[in-house]
Image 1: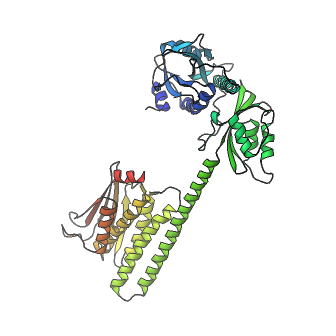
Image 2: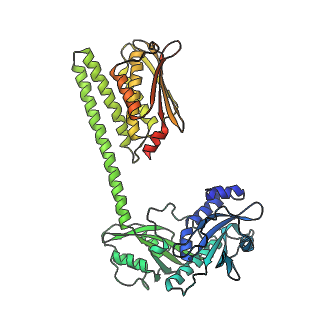
Image 3: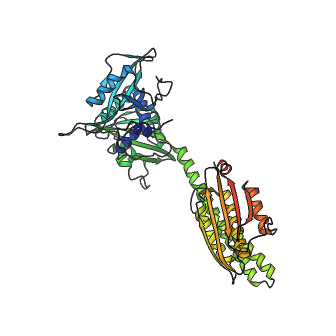
Length: 497
């Protein structure tokens, strides 16, 4: 399905600023639909003087009119004149009589989406039209809450038509558990006095410890009575509770956390009150804290594993220096190098929350480690790498790092033994696979013959057994050896997800 941006840009009539404005408004589509008890549709003009729907939100507490998504559809003939008038005249246009939609009586309101209000020398900049489609088939005597919700919706529609809503100063990307109208709504007057509190809003403040009625009370005084006197609180809370700025904050008391969102109400730029949405998010915040604790624990584990592996590597290094057997010294040095390579992966994991690894960073550190340890006194190896490995899941980063450590070590110790030469590592990543070539300019292997040592056995086990990949050794024309590793990325990505 096309996104709002795709649909808007396809018409070729809007700037980036217009698209951002429409995105912000569409982000509050659910709020508008719930307050109006109606479907909300956003339309933008097309190049042939029509309109196309770029966003649609169904109400949470009323029957929808549109059982099928209408995003991408052109405006229907019965709405076209109304939508056109709202767009060209920059004013709200209500249907004169009930409109019938698929045998259901409806009332339609067309609201111009104004990004810049009119000035002395310029007209208002209208970037689209918002339509409210109210289902009259289930009409019943409205409750006080429904009347208040509708009044709030009308205030917001007026703000849309006067460029006061959405407010670009409001924070974006709300935290999980952002309050909705059905979670709890408080209406404030211009002085911050509560004129209405929905039952859910009253329940949320009762759980915080406020036992009286909210209506008739300044909300900021209610917060003062709830909060412990010596406890730190969100610095933005007073602004939110007074209804003076479009902001979000949490209020905590008695082990309960209530998330608040304030939407100041304005009439052509003059503040007339505010809507405060509230939601008990105690369980959500508890889960978030558990996740933070879990992530911190995982980082600490990786950090400790890295430290332990480095300790093991140091012990192996000390033991290698003290042994008198050349064969034993080589074995201990190789073991030390393998342990150090694994430690590099855990060190990278301990630096962030994600369990994916930037393998280019890991391999750069591994390559430096191998070049320092593997080079013999009479061997001078020039190592270089090219291409991008990209991001890999940690469970694949360790075996790949260890396998490449073995291959580069063999290239330096055996391919370039006692000589000067190059070792090159080339990574080639596509959507389907990761191919890595390790080539050296050394003496090469007899064609068709592969080493049978422990290092070769380790590489085969890691690449074929743990990564379900393939590995191939062959001699380059002229001199040197090239080892090609190929790993299917679809296999990796499925496990990573």
